[in-house]
Amino acid sequence: MAARDILHKMKEKVGFGSDPDSGKGKSKMSKHITHGFHLVKGRSYHAMEDYLVARFKQIDNNELGLFAIFDGHAGHNVPNYLQSHLFDNILKEPDFWKEPVNSVKKAYSITDSSILEKSGELGRGGSTAVTAILINGQKLIVANIGDSRAVLSKKGVAKQLSVDHEPITEHEDIKNRGGFVSRFPGDVPRVDGRLAVSRAFGDKSLKKHLSSEPHVTVEKINDDAEFVILASDGLWKVMSNQEAVNTIKDIKDARSSAKRLTEEAVNRKSSDDISCIVVKLQ
Image (cartoon, one colour):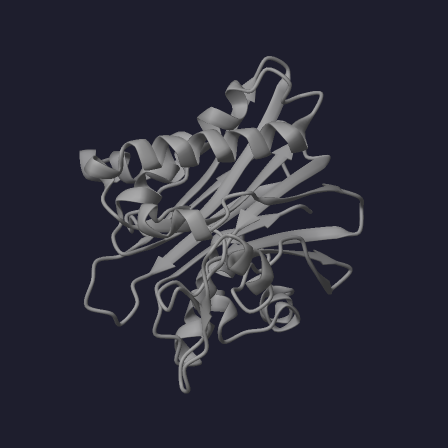
């Protein structure tokens, strides 16, 4: 076998194919749990601003599935930083195993403070986030800020596990912080006329009027849980939760499922960057 073919096989084994924007992996503890991801650059002139994490990690006798979508704005430095640091900060929390919800909230806050302190290096941009931690294939902890979303399929029915943080729904909180929400004709509502989400990492110039507190939920994984979809708003702008579930319910392979969703979003004229992770639970 040629060296090139051996390298390709090695990449496949750890979850990376020849395409850096597509990959897959599987649990060692639960062989039926697999994940796949796919990213597609949008039609904008700036560089790709979506980043993701999709991997399994062993800690003592526990296995964690770590999955995240980071959708940057005004640059890619912040989502790139999140890709490298957010899960590390979560797992450093001493009470993670006993109080996972509070630990995730603390880690989000610590990470945001670090980003703001490094604004000279990272720039003025920011990022939304949706993270999912699968513990031993039995419990799922989902957190998000912004409009990247997590959806669970249970017996073919879509259940949204995250909350879209939109300026129009949180305008009172923004106003109480001294900000405002613009509503110009032909445009979406924006914080201070600039940002289309009400919660985000970074964005130092808007931080007084933004929140970085995540919505966190814990979901027990029962026999009726089939798969989880995590995706940036490039997918959800053109597809409902149930449409996404219906699109891949008959596809067994996780990576093929993620790729199919991104292709469908492109077919529906999504012009944004699109990143998608599918975690098959059965």
